[in-house]
Length: 321
Image (tube, rainbow, N blue to C red; front, side, top):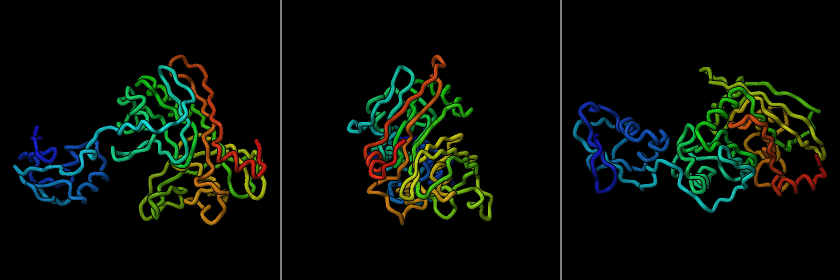
């Protein structure tokens, strides 16, 4: 062990085997639970000291030097911070699974202990026994995620065995997720969008159709298939029922926008210059979740009603399902 006590915070003595290592690489090795982005932010904030002075990201270390963390202790926490004030609705719960109705404006999880106000923070407070369930310390038991502005159903495993069985269902595309989306323009009665997605090289916040995202270097892409069915249309918008054969970040939003049907309120994907009907979010709701229970294989079919602000928009437009 090369960690020693320090008055300011954790301190590591650089062993001979690490002589010549960059400071950022040394820190990542000592604190593997922290993301590269968080470590870089801490280095930029001068939270890591080398023999008492602020170290630089690419600085080479010498044997015997001491590296000390001198920032706020919360930066080094290894689990989501418990938050008791969040109040997502519990749709279903038993000994093995938990299904929550995530409100819009709440992220599914964060990527460090500095991220707060997420479902993971709620789980840390109210279901602390889930802390070691799953594949990531920042996603306790979480099988999938929803965008921060998307409301609706989130499936959570309460045991590792349940997590692995449900993950297998996801890989085999046996878990069916159904959404309601209000989009601009009048759509076909039904359709399928089958086009791979990739990160948009011009905007790190966005995904794009893989062909559009291709640059000088071949971009990594993910297969994505979206089905939609029109429920009703009025005043230049359409209410759609959307289901996924795959689950890629922003899949529904990108696919529908690519067909000329941006989701109402989705400023990132084509609706910035249109009315949002008073919404402070986009109109996308994960309303139904179908899967097999991990314990006894029985069919589970759970639903979550539209949030009040979404129902009000449909009533104003006289759109009904």
